[in-house]
Image 1: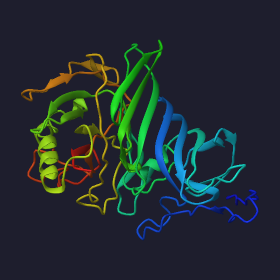
Image 2: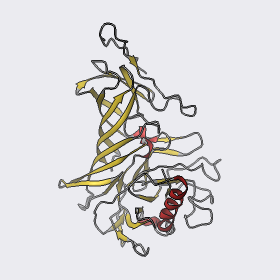
Image 3: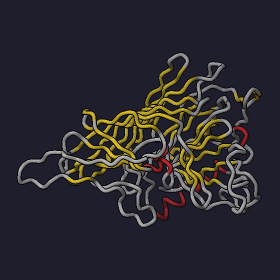
Length: 386
C-alpha cells in the first residue's frame, strides 16, 4: 500500500510556485536512486542497536541545501518503520512508496536555503540481494552484523540521498549493550572516534567523518575483532579488523591494504581520506549464494574509514573462550577484543568482496578469491582508493 502526497504550500504572489523534488537523479543503471531538488551537506546519525534481537532504533538529522524551490522532497529508505519526521524543527507530513520516503514541510523551502530534516525510525534492518546474487544492506554475520552500502545498501539502515553524486560529512553516535560478562562490544564507524561513554550496561561511541563521502561508503560495525594498526609508505594510518576465526585466512591483508592504497594513489591522485584499512569477517552458513553462481558474484566495494576504539583482551565465540591470535605484522600494534554471537563489520576505505566459498586473500586467486564453491563463509575488505 502506498500513500500519495500533495502540497498546498503557499508562495508569495508573483514568485514561482515551489515544486516537488525529483524522485531519482536519472541514473540509467539506478533510475530511482538519489533525489533531486537538494544537496546534502551532513548526516548526523544516532543509533541504538540491540545485537541479540537485531533491532535498530535511529534518528537521522540531515542538513541540506535546496537547489530549487521545494514543496516536498524525497529520501531513499528501505524497510524500517518511520515514526516521525520534521523539517526545520516543525512536524512534516511523510509518506512512503517502495523505497521512497517523501517529506512535505509545512512551509516551502526556498532555492538556496539550508534546511534540516529529522527522521526517527526503528525495526529490523534488512539484507538486500541484487540480481547477480550479491548482498548488501544490513547483513547479519554468525557473530553480529555488517552494514555494506554499494551500490544501494545504505538505504537499509538510514534515510538519505543515496546516489554517490551527493557526498556529505558524517557524525555517527552508536549505543550498544555490553555482553553478559560486562565486556564492551567494539563499535567502529567512519572517520575518527571522538567520544566514548560507558553507561554501565551500555556503551556509546561517537564517530566523525570530516571528509565528504558518498553514502554507500557509510559504515558502522558492532562486535569483536582483532584490530591491527600500521601505516602506508606515505604515512597514512592503516586499520585492520579481523574476526579471530579468520586470522589465518587474512594473513595477506596487512601487506595488501597499504600496497593497494599506495598503488591507487600514485595512479589516480592523492587519497581523499585520513585513513585506510580493511575488515575480514566470518559469515554464517545461512548467508548463501545461488548454486548457479559457481564462481561468485562480481566484487562489491564499500569505501569507509575505520579508526579504532579501545577494548578488552579476551576472545570468545558463543560459550567457548580462547586466546585471541596476535598479529605478527612487523611495526604494527594490535588490540585484541572479545568475540560473541553478534558483531558488525566496519569497512575503511575498502573494497569489500563477498563471494561463495571465498579463498583466503593470500591465494593466487587474488582479492576475495575465485575458487571453491559452497556457502559464503568470509567477508573480505580490500582497501582501494575512493
